[in-house]
Length: 155
Picture 1 (spheres, rainbow, N blue to C red):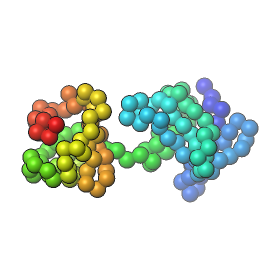
Picture 2 (tube, one colour; picture 1 turned 45 degrees about the horizontal axis):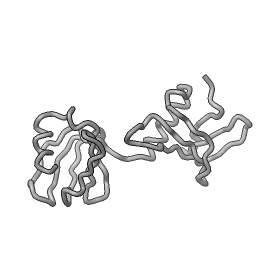
Picture 3 (spheres, rainbow, N blue to C red; picture 1 turned 90 degrees about the vertical axis):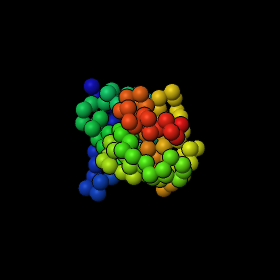
């Protein structure tokens, strides 16, 4: 399968999109339309000026090389660690400091208030810390019992 474009990083780490007609766009961006609900679908490839160059329905539609480069570009652009486990909290009233294990390693976050926990669906949450970092809880029901018990105190 070939895409109507190719992706590569230049020597300076900038994404270069080469279109089928040979035109190149240096400093391109890759963005998810729905980063939480459908992270591997609806991907937009944009020029440095923000003009859409290509639309990808599903990352799996791309050839392996382009998929790997697009995924790497997305990871560099997005920072939303996923909470895998809640190790402890210093207080059940807010503000409180949470010790968590995330998809990017151990972290501490400061929860200013219960309103900083946003429910996206029955089992999906976003927790915003006092420094503006957003943490994702992808599936509340898949978390261990202790984590769910601690979270119940704040929900």
